[in-house]
Length: 72
Image (cartoon, rainbow, N blue to C red):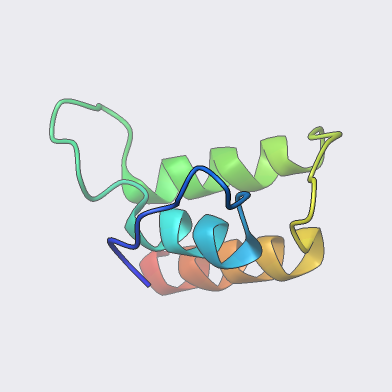
């Protein structure tokens, strides 16, 4: 999934969001938050996100929690 480019005529998908989460906290050394902190923040803010478009909110949050368990 990683590295897949999104064409302009494609919308952001659940697969794209999961791919983003797979790499969260791994690609920028200048960020002071740990991967664990970033995942915790993502999960916390996900509940306040009103517009999920075509994304499967449950699947994304479940995946984020699974990643958090792996780094915890």
